[in-house]
Length: 221
Image (cartoon, rainbow, N blue to C red; front, side, top):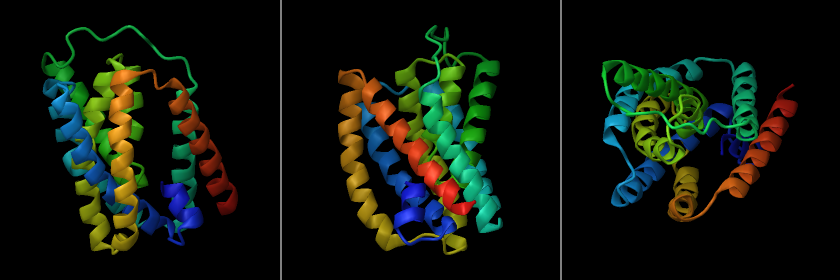
Protein backbone atom coordinates (compact mmCIF):
# COMPACT_ATOMS: atom_id res chain seq x y z
CA UNK A 1 0.00 0.00 0.00
CA UNK A 2 2.77 2.45 0.88
CA UNK A 3 4.62 1.76 -2.37
CA UNK A 4 1.42 2.09 -4.41
CA UNK A 5 0.47 5.43 -2.84
CA UNK A 6 3.99 6.78 -3.25
CA UNK A 7 4.32 5.59 -6.86
CA UNK A 8 0.82 6.21 -8.21
CA UNK A 9 -1.16 8.12 -5.58
CA UNK A 10 0.64 11.43 -5.84
CA UNK A 11 1.60 11.40 -2.16
CA UNK A 12 4.99 12.03 -0.62
CA UNK A 13 6.59 9.07 1.15
CA UNK A 14 5.63 10.55 4.53
CA UNK A 15 2.01 11.01 3.42
CA UNK A 16 1.88 7.55 1.85
CA UNK A 17 3.14 5.91 5.05
CA UNK A 18 0.87 7.99 7.29
CA UNK A 19 -2.26 7.46 5.18
CA UNK A 20 -1.62 3.74 4.79
CA UNK A 21 -1.06 3.26 8.52
CA UNK A 22 -4.25 5.15 9.39
CA UNK A 23 -6.38 2.78 7.29
CA UNK A 24 -5.00 -0.26 9.10
CA UNK A 25 -6.71 0.77 12.32
CA UNK A 26 -10.05 0.02 10.67
CA UNK A 27 -8.97 -3.23 9.03
CA UNK A 28 -7.62 -4.28 12.43
CA UNK A 29 -10.97 -3.60 14.12
CA UNK A 30 -12.90 -5.63 11.54
CA UNK A 31 -10.29 -8.38 11.42
CA UNK A 32 -10.20 -8.71 15.20
CA UNK A 33 -13.98 -8.96 15.36
CA UNK A 34 -14.14 -11.58 12.63
CA UNK A 35 -11.36 -13.71 14.12
CA UNK A 36 -12.82 -13.36 17.62
CA UNK A 37 -16.19 -14.58 16.35
CA UNK A 38 -14.46 -17.75 15.20
CA UNK A 39 -12.63 -18.11 18.53
CA UNK A 40 -9.23 -17.92 16.84
CA UNK A 41 -7.61 -15.15 18.92
CA UNK A 42 -5.69 -16.39 21.97
CA UNK A 43 -5.65 -13.30 24.19
CA UNK A 44 -2.87 -14.74 26.36
CA UNK A 45 -0.76 -14.29 23.23
CA UNK A 46 -2.39 -11.18 21.76
CA UNK A 47 -2.53 -9.04 24.93
CA UNK A 48 1.25 -8.75 25.55
CA UNK A 49 1.89 -8.22 21.83
CA UNK A 50 -0.55 -5.29 21.82
CA UNK A 51 0.91 -3.92 25.06
CA UNK A 52 4.36 -3.79 23.51
CA UNK A 53 3.06 -1.88 20.50
CA UNK A 54 1.29 0.91 22.40
CA UNK A 55 4.20 3.34 22.72
CA UNK A 56 6.44 1.91 20.02
CA UNK A 57 3.96 2.61 17.22
CA UNK A 58 4.05 6.30 18.10
CA UNK A 59 7.83 6.24 18.43
CA UNK A 60 8.28 4.64 15.00
CA UNK A 61 6.07 7.22 13.29
CA UNK A 62 7.77 10.06 15.16
CA UNK A 63 11.22 8.90 14.02
CA UNK A 64 10.05 8.51 10.41
CA UNK A 65 8.46 11.96 10.50
CA UNK A 66 11.84 13.53 11.22
CA UNK A 67 13.75 11.67 8.52
CA UNK A 68 14.71 13.00 5.11
CA UNK A 69 12.35 11.56 2.42
CA UNK A 70 15.07 9.83 0.36
CA UNK A 71 16.62 7.55 3.02
CA UNK A 72 13.16 6.93 4.45
CA UNK A 73 11.92 5.78 1.04
CA UNK A 74 14.91 3.47 0.62
CA UNK A 75 14.36 1.89 4.04
CA UNK A 76 10.63 1.39 3.44
CA UNK A 77 11.30 -0.10 0.00
CA UNK A 78 13.79 -2.57 1.50
CA UNK A 79 11.28 -3.54 4.21
CA UNK A 80 8.61 -4.21 1.58
CA UNK A 81 11.01 -6.27 -0.54
CA UNK A 82 12.08 -8.29 2.50
CA UNK A 83 8.45 -8.97 3.41
CA UNK A 84 7.82 -10.37 -0.06
CA UNK A 85 11.02 -12.42 -0.06
CA UNK A 86 10.25 -13.90 3.36
CA UNK A 87 7.18 -15.68 2.01
CA UNK A 88 9.39 -17.86 -0.20
CA UNK A 89 11.73 -18.89 2.63
CA UNK A 90 11.27 -22.36 4.23
CA UNK A 91 8.90 -22.21 7.20
CA UNK A 92 9.37 -23.92 10.54
CA UNK A 93 6.36 -26.14 11.13
CA UNK A 94 6.87 -27.37 14.73
CA UNK A 95 4.32 -25.48 16.86
CA UNK A 96 5.37 -23.73 20.04
CA UNK A 97 4.20 -25.57 23.14
CA UNK A 98 2.00 -23.81 25.71
CA UNK A 99 1.97 -20.49 23.83
CA UNK A 100 1.45 -17.48 26.09
CA UNK A 101 2.33 -19.23 29.37
CA UNK A 102 4.95 -17.96 31.83
CA UNK A 103 6.55 -14.57 32.35
CA UNK A 104 9.38 -15.29 29.90
CA UNK A 105 6.86 -16.07 27.20
CA UNK A 106 4.93 -12.92 28.02
CA UNK A 107 8.12 -10.84 27.87
CA UNK A 108 9.00 -12.39 24.51
CA UNK A 109 5.58 -11.54 23.12
CA UNK A 110 5.80 -7.99 24.46
CA UNK A 111 9.13 -7.63 22.67
CA UNK A 112 7.56 -8.88 19.45
CA UNK A 113 4.82 -6.28 19.87
CA UNK A 114 7.30 -3.50 20.56
CA UNK A 115 9.38 -4.31 17.48
CA UNK A 116 6.30 -4.74 15.29
CA UNK A 117 4.73 -1.54 16.58
CA UNK A 118 7.87 0.47 15.90
CA UNK A 119 8.25 -1.03 12.43
CA UNK A 120 4.60 -0.40 11.68
CA UNK A 121 4.73 3.24 12.74
CA UNK A 122 8.03 3.79 10.96
CA UNK A 123 7.08 2.26 7.61
CA UNK A 124 3.30 2.67 7.55
CA UNK A 125 3.15 -0.93 6.32
CA UNK A 126 1.08 -2.29 9.19
CA UNK A 127 1.92 -4.45 12.19
CA UNK A 128 1.28 -7.86 10.57
CA UNK A 129 4.12 -7.28 8.13
CA UNK A 130 6.47 -7.54 11.12
CA UNK A 131 4.62 -9.57 13.75
CA UNK A 132 3.60 -12.53 11.57
CA UNK A 133 7.13 -13.37 10.36
CA UNK A 134 8.53 -12.87 13.87
CA UNK A 135 5.91 -15.15 15.43
CA UNK A 136 6.42 -17.81 12.77
CA UNK A 137 10.17 -17.72 13.38
CA UNK A 138 9.38 -18.23 17.08
CA UNK A 139 7.26 -21.27 16.09
CA UNK A 140 3.79 -19.95 16.86
CA UNK A 141 0.97 -21.56 14.89
CA UNK A 142 0.39 -19.58 11.65
CA UNK A 143 -3.32 -18.98 12.31
CA UNK A 144 -2.51 -17.74 15.83
CA UNK A 145 0.11 -15.37 14.40
CA UNK A 146 -2.31 -13.97 11.84
CA UNK A 147 -5.16 -13.63 14.34
CA UNK A 148 -2.88 -11.87 16.83
CA UNK A 149 -1.73 -9.47 14.12
CA UNK A 150 -5.30 -8.23 13.67
CA UNK A 151 -5.49 -6.97 17.25
CA UNK A 152 -1.96 -5.59 16.95
CA UNK A 153 -3.03 -3.50 13.94
CA UNK A 154 -5.52 -1.55 16.02
CA UNK A 155 -2.96 -0.55 18.64
CA UNK A 156 0.01 0.05 16.34
CA UNK A 157 -1.96 1.96 13.71
CA UNK A 158 -3.75 4.15 16.23
CA UNK A 159 -0.54 4.91 18.13
CA UNK A 160 1.43 5.70 14.99
CA UNK A 161 -1.39 7.73 13.47
CA UNK A 162 -1.38 10.10 16.43
CA UNK A 163 2.20 11.03 15.58
CA UNK A 164 1.42 11.26 11.85
CA UNK A 165 -1.59 13.48 12.50
CA UNK A 166 0.61 15.90 14.43
CA UNK A 167 2.82 16.18 11.33
CA UNK A 168 -0.19 16.42 8.96
CA UNK A 169 0.89 13.27 7.10
CA UNK A 170 -2.58 11.70 6.75
CA UNK A 171 -4.67 12.31 3.61
CA UNK A 172 -8.13 11.50 4.97
CA UNK A 173 -9.82 11.63 1.56
CA UNK A 174 -7.51 9.00 0.13
CA UNK A 175 -7.71 6.99 3.35
CA UNK A 176 -11.52 6.86 3.19
CA UNK A 177 -11.49 5.42 -0.34
CA UNK A 178 -8.79 2.87 0.44
CA UNK A 179 -10.43 1.72 3.66
CA UNK A 180 -13.64 0.67 1.91
CA UNK A 181 -11.79 -1.74 -0.36
CA UNK A 182 -9.48 -2.92 2.41
CA UNK A 183 -12.44 -3.89 4.58
CA UNK A 184 -13.91 -5.95 1.75
CA UNK A 185 -10.53 -7.64 1.41
CA UNK A 186 -10.42 -8.41 5.14
CA UNK A 187 -13.79 -10.18 4.99
CA UNK A 188 -12.64 -12.33 2.08
CA UNK A 189 -9.23 -12.94 3.66
CA UNK A 190 -10.62 -14.17 6.99
CA UNK A 191 -12.83 -16.70 5.20
CA UNK A 192 -9.88 -17.86 3.10
CA UNK A 193 -7.61 -18.19 6.14
CA UNK A 194 -10.06 -20.53 7.88
CA UNK A 195 -11.33 -22.44 4.86
CA UNK A 196 -8.44 -23.12 2.50
CA UNK A 197 -4.73 -23.02 1.89
CA UNK A 198 -3.64 -19.46 1.15
CA UNK A 199 -0.23 -20.41 -0.26
CA UNK A 200 -0.92 -19.22 -3.81
CA UNK A 201 -2.47 -15.97 -2.61
CA UNK A 202 0.45 -15.32 -0.25
CA UNK A 203 2.93 -15.90 -3.05
CA UNK A 204 1.03 -13.57 -5.37
CA UNK A 205 1.05 -10.88 -2.68
CA UNK A 206 4.76 -11.54 -2.11
CA UNK A 207 5.55 -11.01 -5.79
CA UNK A 208 3.61 -7.75 -5.71
CA UNK A 209 5.60 -6.64 -2.66
CA UNK A 210 8.92 -7.44 -4.34
CA UNK A 211 7.96 -5.72 -7.61
CA UNK A 212 6.42 -2.60 -6.05
CA UNK A 213 9.22 -2.29 -3.51
CA UNK A 214 11.74 -2.71 -6.31
CA UNK A 215 10.13 0.03 -8.37
CA UNK A 216 10.06 2.34 -5.36
CA UNK A 217 13.72 1.62 -4.66
CA UNK A 218 14.75 2.08 -8.29
CA UNK A 219 12.90 5.39 -8.56
CA UNK A 220 14.56 6.68 -5.42
CA UNK A 221 18.06 5.61 -6.40
